[in-house]
Image (cartoon, rainbow, N blue to C red):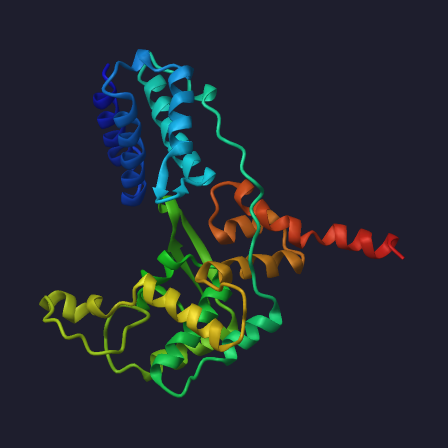
Length: 306
């Protein structure tokens, strides 16, 4: 089996049998095409640890931008794609390298940036809610902090999806995994206030309230898809709001997700519940928060450190 043919079949398997997202498919294709370009269209059986070592040296010396090499994290993404590919090859009984033999590079422990309660309140207060754009922005900030949503999950929300009476709704996150998220009373209040100011029947929960200059397809115009906020617009709003609030940290929608998780753990939530609320597939991902929120260690310190 030639490498190019095996990669094609693997990507088709990911698309059809695994039903993986378009983003995952695009990333796998990119990383594996890079390996194919490095190794050439060789036989699967010709791939050994010596070739993998040479490829890793190639990645380590590859410049992402002028004088900016690929980060260890990005290099590992390439290796993760390779391991998934080799795992598929083994499953097909093709003679290839065993995925367990391809190890990831060790990377430093992740640090998590989050906002404390005082910073969060400053962020919320800095929004001018006198106009509909301000009401929308305050509702977005409160929703991000109340639910821990990813930015991609937030921009896809429709009005009929969010149950403001029950204060909870389902979201389909990474890997098409469905979970329930919960709204605080404050978040519900701001979303209701924003929606009460709307005079449209558009589907998206959050709209760009500037008039669109482009002529739109009739179906899109009826549903309001051309007015749906983009991830970039929300990221810029969060950054600018934090700047106005005088917060020196780099604040992004994901920082509000970190703040949501950190607050839960500080107040005694168990890590499995937080994993579920964040939609993490692995508990390992959620454990990045524990080193800054370990309540037990704090209690021990307070008891024995005089």
